[in-house]
Amino acid sequence: MAKGVAVESRMEVRRVLAQDLGSLHDLDREVFGTLAYPYFALRQIFDVHADEILVAQINGRMCGYSLTMTARSSDASWFQGLGVVTPMRGRGIGRRLARAALVLLHQRGSTQVRLAVRSDDVVAKALYESLGFQPEAEEADYYGVGENRTLMFCTLTSALVDPWSTGGLPASTRLVRHSSEPERASGSSLRG
Ligand SMILES: CC(C)(COP(=O)(O)OP(=O)(O)OC[C@H]1O[C@@H](n2cnc3c(N)ncnc32)[C@H](O)[C@@H]1OP(=O)(O)O)[C@@H](O)C(=O)NCCC(=O)NCCS
Image 1 (cartoon, rainbow, N blue to C red):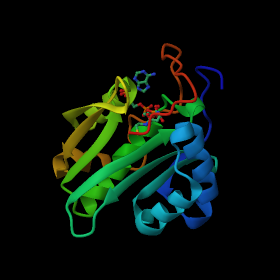
Image 2 (image 1 turned 90 degrees about the vertical axis):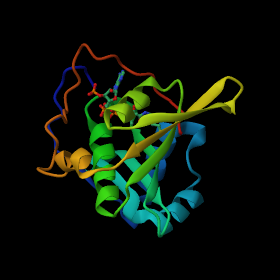
Image 3 (image 1 turned 135 degrees about the horizontal axis):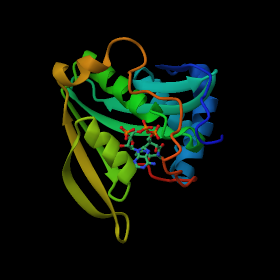
Image 4 (image 1 turned 60 degrees about the vertical axis):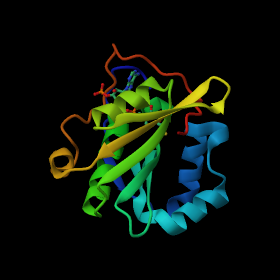
């Protein structure tokens, strides 16, 4: 897609359905490559956490997803996955998905959310920090020698999430890539 060209379509963020699993698997592989969930694992995650998986669609085509996991009888959750297909990045889709996921967690009673992200993933870390996550710990060599991961933590409060819960698309959501924004490399395998 050419830079600066408006996407004349509406973005929808909704809960995943069983019939989405094939498309979700394709999307996960496109975003995370060799670190994508095998189909059977995705199916098992769906069986337990379907109500914690959100998908973003534009004109009916899936372009992103988020996955959180909350243990039963716990107010602590994990943000386990967030991905947007490369051509659609930089348009606010990741932020919209992440906000919606955090609003859902808050509505369900979660007060703490943790996540892990590769320490060199500056894009994801900047997004999570802007959503209220703070670095909590660093684990050296987690993905291999010299490949560290950062654990991040967020306290969910009404003050944080209420501004994200109203009015459909947040005002910050944009469906136009500004020509000054850098293109990102494709084929990332950055699962936290
Ligand atoms: C991380 C990811 C989900 C962000 O999705 P996205 O739709 O491109 O993100 P958004 O357009 O909503 O931008 C959110 C923030 O990310 C950061 N960001 C986005 N594009 C960026 C770029 N090219 N350079 C630097 N920061 C960038 C900014 O902080 C941005 O906030 P801003 O628009 O207020 O400046 C996406 O890049 C992705 O799928 N990456 C591969 C998978 C991954 O790393 N997932 C996270 C770890 S599990």
